[in-house]
Amino acid sequence: MIENLETLITLSRTGTMLETATVLKISQSAVSKRITALERHYDRPLVERYGRRVVLTADGTRLVERVTPLVAELRSVFLEAPALQRGKVILGVSEAILASWAPSLFARVREVLPELEFEFHAQRSPVVLDRIRSGEYMVGLCTGSAEADTDLVSEVLRLEPMVIVPSALGDCDYPGAGELPVITIESRSGAWASIEEDMRRLGIRRETSLESFFAVAQMALAGFGHGLIPRGVARTLGVPDAKCIDMGRRGLNRPVRFVARKSMFSRPLIQSFYRCMQQEARALFEVNDDG
Image (cartoon, rainbow, N blue to C red; front, side, top):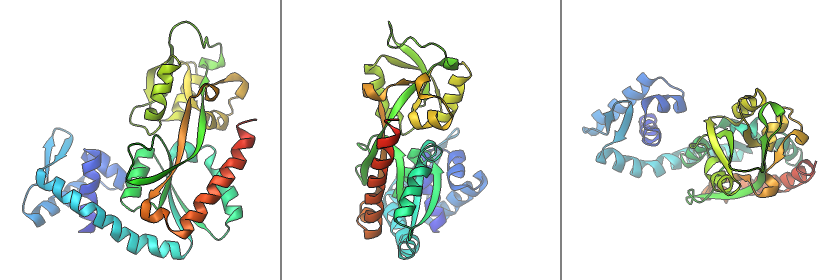
């Protein structure tokens, strides 16, 4: 029953059977069977299908609203509490962050707190936030503005500078006359909402969007257009700083946030972990961002 309820909760967020199956790492057929089992149990329709999209009925919406906190609490009791006792932290980390500078930061934290055990999960920032809310992850390291996440504790760990990678590392007329068209991240990402306004202010226009900053960088390097990406992604791919246009100095940065549910953030182990992350991030990026 818990798995079926978790499936309905996930479906309410994704809106499609395919995306739900992808998030839960099960087949679409399994998703459909779980929803059907719930509808039989409660003897009423919980979803309505409109082509590929799925919308909850009024009964489905009420059920999700009531059971979501209960499912998160069950996870806290049976998953998080035993893990905390063992000194284990289950983290969801934005893919672009975990694929660039985050491993160096976590390695520094591990040296200071060797008693901690980490379990890492790489996801897009919106997925990280959803799984924190559901109790699947204890904490997260993700991007984006905290304004929409008032139900969570969200502390900015750093402001990562954005850079422009010129097409094929050639010339880039910025700042020049008119808007500069760039390839950058798509609208559903965690980072987009936090950089969109500053891009407009600085005369940068998104011409093409992709689902991955690493894909943006590779397309820019191949000459398909200028790419707007985080500095950590550029450095991971070996793009020289001298070839990039530093937009961080102009106020274009993506916030990287340490996120947790309020009850989890108050735990002594998580407090120690967060303070260590703050300290080590400050030390790491004072060197790297100046270099």
